[in-house]
Image (cartoon, rainbow, N blue to C red; front, side, top):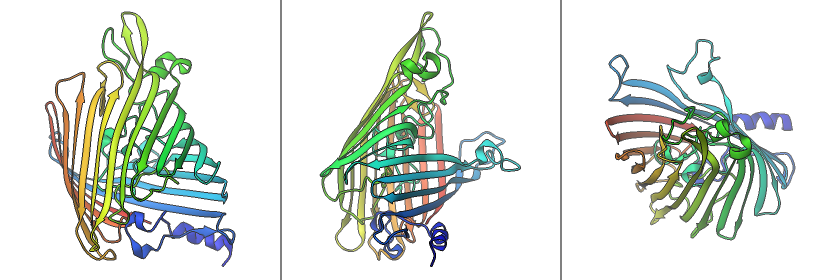
Length: 406
């Protein structure tokens, strides 16, 4: 078979990083096109889609309670020409529904965009540096969450703590370093902040801060952001080849990690003191723990995660899901015993509580759901009920999601 034909086959037949990280032993490690005999030159590709039917109880009178949503459609590719160099490209779209569709597919909501594009140089076997549009974030495990293998229907929204404020969809343009010293792993980065983020407000006199430092103060004073995440692998070692953290191994590994991370944006927020704009540092810190392990040898497994996060976006900052204050979040799930090559079920619960300096009310979010794994994460259904309260806001959502990952 020629190399050209192998390339085409690779595009059709997708891959995974490891057999057990996705919980589908029949997948046999996925597919990888080698361009030399020892496998140092290769090309890999992954593709996935998540389709949802969503029922929301609290909607305007003229809006349907039920809608369909293409939550994610993605393609990820990476390749090495030798052991020293790696390039990764990741593109797709999110939340394509009746409100974001366009008649000819040319509207903003219909467009593909790059999630990641980075190049990496491996200094040694365990230490690398790279740059580009990347996902080597700080703060917590959930701010580096993979969307391929989440246990809950989706990530805890508040854990993507800078999405759209300082970055493009949780990705910055900059440089990073990553590596491991034995069981201790690290990733750090220095990046440019986005100029025109989601928070387009201007500060009011003696009012709360707005996240617009680079837009209002300029790139010299508010242009750079710094982040890092560090974790210690107590049991099995997780891979840090790519930044995307696994949500649940379905008992394929025995993992217990403790971690801590940070995000710092000097003068990232701005307040108005009488007639003078003043920069305020954005500083976010978190600690977390992740446990995932089989129970006995009958195919059952337990997954648990917990995090505490301190958020400082500036004086009394509150915008959408973001706010100065504190956050606690946790989830736990249990895979029932059964043949790992057949359908398995995993009920789970999640809970988040976010406190804000600007208001007295907490944002509390409770979720309960279940996954049906037909071939690990490669083919699964997720049914979830979520209840959210914040002040007068009180909403119930029921979602059914089908996912195929190749």
